[in-house]
Picture 1: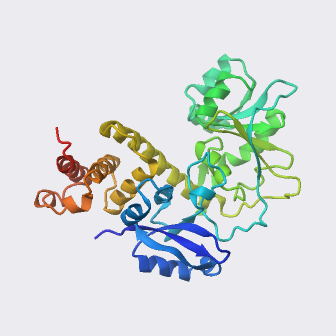
Picture 2: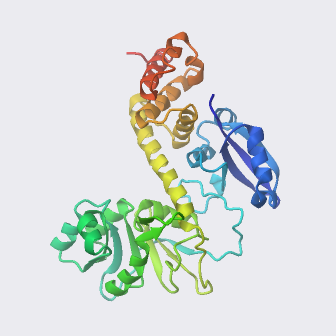
Picture 3: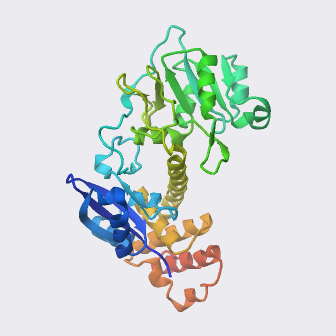
Length: 383
């Protein structure tokens, strides 16, 4: 028996709506909202009661941006809520921003200056944190170019992880390395200019963080995940003290421009409670999202048509709900579902055939292969 993911719209007491997604029956999910004190105080009812993903797609369309919230669903939490796509703070980041019922307009938050160029400095360079885990051969390239640089790892960590370490370097705004790093979302710039040693001392505080169970982990400040966290969570939480008064952080934008995130003068401090717990959940979602993006691109080539991310997210989550876990199996089931969409069928229908029931005890990889082969025949796509 499978546990389906549902999507709904929760009406708040202020008259606005937020997206809802969770796994379980509609009744159990509605009860979960009612029993959560944070939501009980601000929710007035349902604008759209929770619907299974397929029913939502049939009602609002398989390309509805709301389906993207399916990538946030996690067995570790009963449900998630997110800002409606058309009300997102930053349309350049097509990821639903999770709704925090404890976040209010009065909470201190970052200020953003978007679509700017890298500011000029007297030195002609700005300090940039670069992620060597994403930029091939970064340490050697920095040394070969003779750039002022500083690795945030030292000692044994530098010896063992230097090729994947965070490196601070002084780069010109038009440097090829900066352009490359920006295209990979693998850098953070800092403004105004400051001494690399002083900035490095500040940033080293955030290269390792302690989880709730006491375990220390390395934290990638210059990663795409932290980029998007900053953009989508202007009120935080953030690592304590990361954003300093009078100091800004430059984030690359998809259109090759830059965004400056900074604390306004009246903000004494930003929220930092439970940062790592919330960020880790967000980062897990991003891993799913990148997998789905890659799968959608590959399937688009197979089908000869573009597969939107919402449609891909729909079929990914349906496959996960049905118990398919391995990546190869998930890609096959996503392709099978998309092929069957063309003829008005769904995978659960053809899985009840005697041919496929014979595979019900097989591994998910083997079973998914049989489902995809059958889907091709049903859709008239068999070679």
